[in-house]
Image 1 (tube, one colour):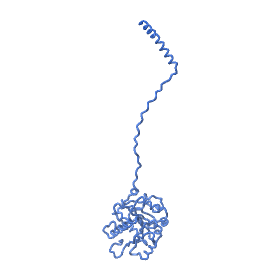
Image 2 (cartoon, helix red, strand yellow):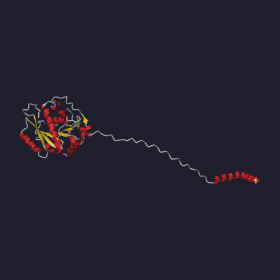
Image 3 (cartoon, one colour):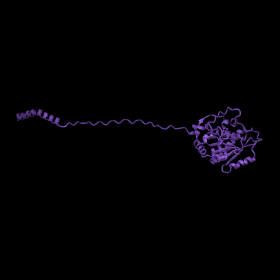
Length: 294
């Protein structure tokens, strides 16, 4: 039994090499199939850090106006008297009273844009417009815009001792942005000054473009008051052309030259469509004040 087993074992061992050779020959004859290793799944790259890039916020339009201090302490010969420099002067007190009453009226009625006019040249309309604007500008957290709309004889630049960037025609026609034309004299006062005489002032004032410019100034700067200095009523028709753009009118009369008939004629021009807020008496007689008193 052991011999038989041993004999069989010897025979299997003798045949083993032949089987290996046959298997190798069969493997070589079979078509070679290469095992393609599937690429390992790439590791995900880290997400790039996204830095929030917010657009730069521009300052509000009021802060973008060119800043030029008035320098009221440096008075020049022949320059218009500014009562804001003399707080104890009776005229300064009168302007403060006018300021308070005007602001109360405008706030109660929702008005902001007023015109300062006079019957004839030399009555003090520009003087009144400048000093009223300075008085209002002393109210904390207020905004006042003073515009020289007297293109017949612009005088606010000289009154304030400032240089005008150009004439008002370019501004009112929309050729120049108000951001480039207006000057911010303080945190509460901005002025629009003019240089040069415009023969077509009346046409400019009643053109739709001028209304759009004024509305833009009022909407974007958001002033409490817009004061417009205008030429004499009885000398030109500029006020009549500009009345639809105004909420109210202040009439300046000269106590040394204005007549009652002239005031009546001015009232006829103003009519009922635009309220006459009041009549200011400049150079009043017998007041004991300076010749520029109200």
